[in-house]
Image (tube, rainbow, N blue to C red; front, side):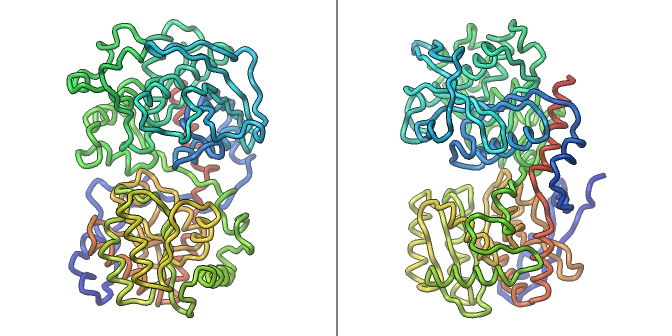
Length: 540
């Protein structure tokens, strides 16, 4: 039974913009659902998970990055965590990923597979040899590294090189060859993003007569539709498919390009994305980024769905966070206050009692809505008691904004350019609020980390943010954060001021914090939704 639709009505705060667009903050669009009703029973027993998903499935996970082997974003987190919990629940899951130069083979005890050493592979006119190395990921799932130095021994995981599409066509085909030569038949081939989106087409063409894959079904997960793997139509021969022009999207070919992600959408047996709301959004003209027509067809056929990402609480939990000197839970929030004082002192920020700390950890990109902070944050800092800590890097204009903000508000703003895992954990633990004003957000993980750390998320109602954060209602005492609708500066300014008003209401604030800390978005629960989808595919 679906959760009832909720209409939240945040109170006005006396600010000039507090009531101007109040309806925009409280009302959902007609087709929006209520926030995801996360499981709040903190059951973590793997035996319980095994009872919930009886029967062993064979699942191949193809991902261009996998935490902790390689990472630039959420794809790596999902690939690593989902595989871990699939393995823990008893499934035969095998992960395939490129062997990048940054992966320490010795530290991972990478073992070459004799039958998969020096395997020839032609991509168009280019000829390569690849080998496969086996490692064991934390939690026990095996990973198979496609080792081809001319393609993957580069300074970064992704490049702007003209052969970028070749790198991932080769990876996709090498993963299929590895399954074939080892005689392993996956029931589900789980592809992720554009990098492996041609796998479904390959299984229906070049590998169509291979008995090993006769029962294999394909799932494509779209982690971010903004990355589509577009390359020139003149390079179509690199696909290695005879009659490829008849197989590809005619509109794209007429425009002179080939879109990898579109062909995953066209040929995969099923498609999912990383939150229910984002699955609806990407079918719209506003969020579909040119692929909405293809996605609407799949949605109408019932083969597109959204599954909210889970959180790996082995890594993100204040009760055992390896980066924190002391640990806490909802019953020991005084420890969180101590960590906040230490953080403020260490970074030279205002440590007076009663001054809240807001944080942000983000890629500094247009997707993340950073431009909304340009007007909203200085306005709030100029009129309210607040400290702000930012961690991230990306586009120059956003880095320059935070640098200038730090100069303008000395002792109240601290910006760390780059990424630091320990600092990210400290910001989550020490902050009272966490800001995510995203233009669009397929899922987002930091808002779910924040809930567990007792750090109130301030989010725009989009994608996974809409599915995981419920606006707090002072009358009912229900809700976990502050949510705003409009993508504009005044809406974010309203949200920041509203959060500060709630912070001044100690009992209400504590209740909101504890509501959030009771939420459980663990992969131990979310993995069941993938297993159910895999089972439906395998039975089709």
